[in-house]
Length: 117
Image 1 (cartoon, one colour):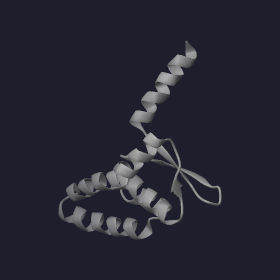
Image 2 (cartoon, rainbow, N blue to C red):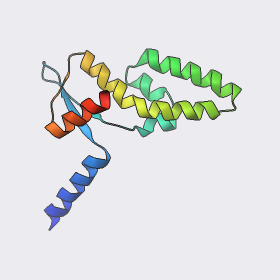
Image 3 (spheres, rainbow, N blue to C red):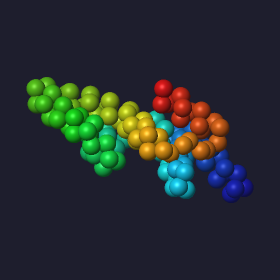
């Protein structure tokens, strides 16, 4: 009974927060979520900076400060929603450019490829 509950939970978790494994030829593995990321929604462009996306992070931080000042913060909230949608995609693109390859189940790889388009 316990193992069936655990399997059911894992299937539900994979649908809600899907992750894909990227593998580097040197043997390193990296897990990247596919889809929405809540950390930029709460912290703005800072997660981009922590993930090494410096140019994009600084640009969005500057844009958020300038437009947020003119619109009393409304533009900053809108920018945070845009950042929340794009963080995982940008991280995955960065890793693919560094030589990582998608290496997971066929369903997860197809979902990741569709997400990158």
